[in-house]
Amino acid sequence: MKNITEKELSEKAKRIKLLILDVDGVLTEGSIILDNDGNEFKSFHVRDGHGIKMLKNAGIEVAIITGRYSKVVERRAKELGITEVYQRCHIKSTAYEHILDKLGISDAETAYIGDDIVDIPLLKRAGLSVAVSDAEEDAKANALMITKNRGGRGAVREVADFLLKSKGLWDEIIREYSET
Picture 1 (tube, rainbow, N blue to C red):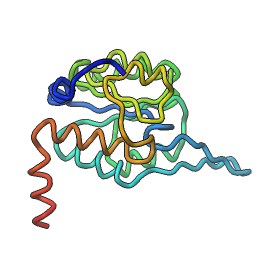
Picture 2 (picture 1 turned 180 degrees about the vertical axis):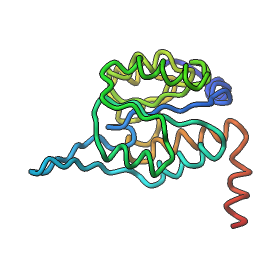
Picture 3 (picture 1 turned 90 degrees about the horizontal axis):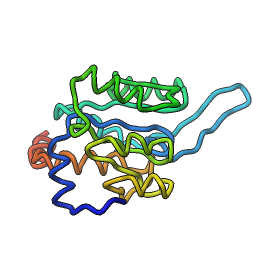
Picture 4 (picture 1 turned 90 degrees about the vertical axis):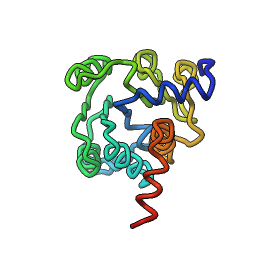
């Protein structure tokens, strides 16, 4: 992990307009379950999904870039309202650049969560780079922030909450939920 203070992290988080997520090891705990019929199964944490919905409701875009292809990822993205989904991306920086160009967002306005060495180029570029707690060590070394939670076990929600709190939006979110 790069040496940065909590205050500096929070200042970077205030600028974020886009959160980009890896899937396996970030949105899931990293297991890929295949059956004899060729079906693929993934497990997603419900609080990660709720965090994504809160970000989107607050006007923060969310995108997915993953090296694998899975219909399950398409389905989960659709459920969460994520329209920028890039699968089979072996060179993730190409998709990253496309998303930023399409949305008119800069590196400084982008957060990226990854867990492995294939994520290092994006961890180096994003204004707020995050590795999940169980990420590969070289990925962690290139991140500004390391979550307390593991991939697929609340790490995305942890980052969502951090972004919303840093932007001063958390109290209003709590107030809205308390009134319903």
